[in-house]
Length: 327
Image (cartoon, rainbow, N blue to C red):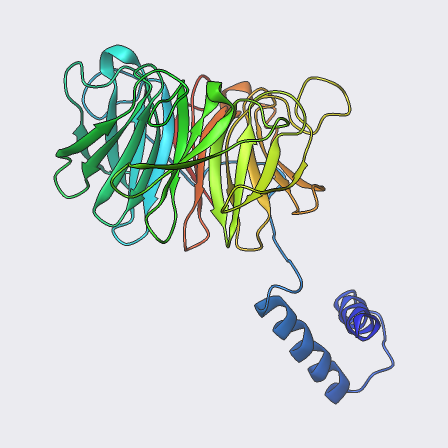
């Protein structure tokens, strides 16, 4: 079966190059049909990314006035309303700014003194979950009016406690997964933020992000090798891969967030390398997005999402400041 597939792919590649091929029209149609079915079923992964990552739209400017951004780190996107939620982590102006995908500023949610260093944000129906690294807690708000529903957590390592929590994500059943960074674990809670369990392994140090893919939990470590750790939903470690550090053989340097594309490849924000790196599920580096010769156009990505329309949205600061939409 694999050889047949490879032969048909080879036939298509040769035709595309304008080289004569010993196959009639019917054979070519069959080849195209088979290839199309494979791509549709995700048997063949065909991601296409630009070598030079330049945004099609940039949103927001640096500042502390309403609608402006200061230390943007967290990022969430609502595919239904097509609204972008950006978390500003600056302690004196900590808030959540809301923009449309066309760049229009919509609203700001904050409360004087309520946040100290908000980082991660996740949406689930009418629920918003927000972590605060310096308050060592997680907030639950109503999305419709951003009224506070509950606040859970204090500094510590026990049940219902956190130590510098970072990114957060929500499962289809409503369970909330928090990257509990300095406790070297992922904390799992129910939709009302009641503690359920912790996911830990000696190889996972300082997780900064957590995502779900099917029935697997993926955690991203900020420090030490490797940086991607895969677990079952119950917490059994399956594997770890992709090296992180400053050695020449390391694949990434300084990571904060990641997401999956439609081919299940892993896109990692590499802050120090000023790029977004795309890896296969086997850990092979497929693409490096970034690398503008113009220093002012280099991204310093901290948060990243991919929309249902396959748009890549990332938040960057220092260089190429703001929220950027690609593709």
